Length: 276
Ligand code: UTP
Image 1 (cartoon, rainbow, N blue to C red):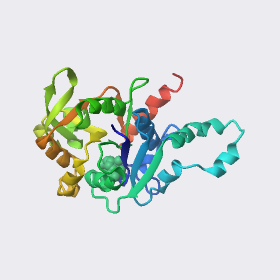
Image 2: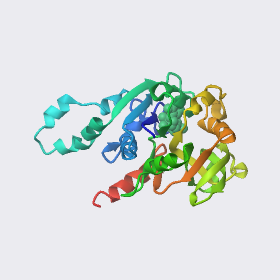
Image 3: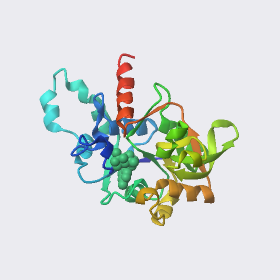
Image 4: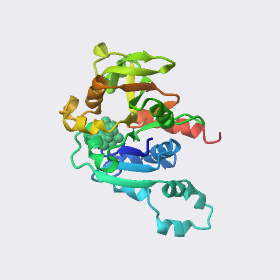
């Protein structure tokens, strides 16, 4: 059973400078809701109520967001604005939030390892809040993955088919098909940010994972890889070699809100659906 969701949120968000100079990237709003709130809602919809957030310097706004603001509540009580806080208040009531800080930004793998203290030794979910996922009124992406985990009990990465020329932005998987589910694959190998000519497929890993806790020991001995960062892809690669890692082509849409283009696309998408 997956009880906890880890949110690595310590990155610098340099692609959004100067907006991210003093504001965490995860707090940038798509319409009126910050990115990380969409992530927490997705985790809750998947049945997860324990949120573990890896933050860093300058990220205190995330903690304040998932806390009660008595002054604000008092100020708008009984006015037409009161409903605007209802959603976040419900979320705070249903979940617990814990935080730890990544002191040096040594990559996503290192951020996940930093979260060990909040996770312990149980399988857990990971959401990168800057990948905003939606499946309309259907099951959310993490919920789909939790259902698969309950069946297969191994690490699972969400993948999306991306254009050939874009594979160099992602971790890319080499896979073999599974029986009975054409959207599920067994991972044979994976490469971080390959040149398009060397990519084993066009299936790119996006910001949703379910990981078994042996990943922590593997990460501890994973040396820095591409870009001098400790890469989760390298650790998953070892897990895939020794056991089982599945890649799941999810139902739904993903917006890369770590990039300006993806962020604008997400904003337009959600704006168009306001009246639905
Ligand atoms: P990104 O690759 O998007 O990096 O990280 P970034 O630093 O956030 O953004 P840019 O590229 O400078 O614009 C993917 C995810 O991993 C987290 C980020 O917060 C983001 O959710 N991360 C990355 C960490 O928590 N720690 C790190 O050391 C690196």
